[in-house]
Amino acid sequence: MILYLDQNYASRMAKHLLGQKGHEAFGGLFLALKGKALAPPSPFHVLETLYPARGPEEKAGYLLPALVEVFAALSQGYWVRPWQEIAKRQEKGLYLEDFLWRGGDWETPADLSPFEGLLQSLPEDPAEAKAWALEEIRRRTGLKEVPFVRLLAGLLAESQRDRRRKPRPSDLLDFVMAATVYPYVDLLLTDRYLRNLLGKKAVGGRRKEVEALVQSLKGE
Image (tube, rainbow, N blue to C red; front, side, top):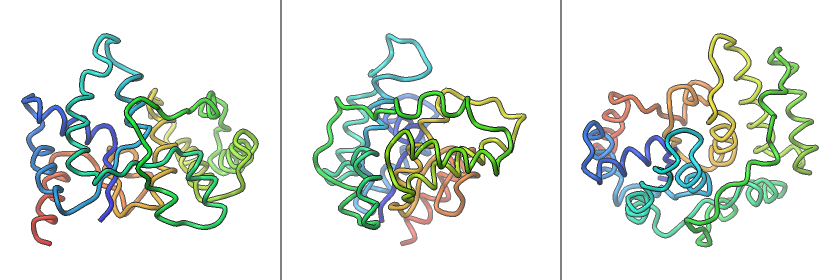
């Protein structure tokens, strides 16, 4: 089973390893995953750990040693390739070797610069937003209409449906991350908002959802 732990899941496992209270369910999941699933780190984790969009600057990177410990136990030495490589390789199809590799490191963050300002420029109508996003992503990246492009455009468009929700600084990163990993993983462990946008292969981060996942793993 291949899982992807978004930053919320990974950081809460790390905080549990550091002895911080309130993350016991995630600590239980960490133990349940060991030996049963492959959960690789990615350049998105590096970006969010070393260059967080929120929080005091002096705390940037403080979780890095614990995150390295988490993924050392769960990744089998694999990393997620940079999104650019994965998306380009999708022009020939979807293959696991185009998703996982052993060349990652904790110094090279994901580059989101091609998507700067994308969310702010979206048309308000979701249907119009999807068509616009498809064309804009292709123009900015030079990619064909591969699964990464379609999924990212779809997530951007869906984000326009709830006009009451205030956009977050992490939304664009979350959408690019999901567009990168979702076609390859069995489960994406993320927050409730992204879970609702993605559907059946996504699991939210509420305590009951985490505990239910632990029980399902124990029953395998």
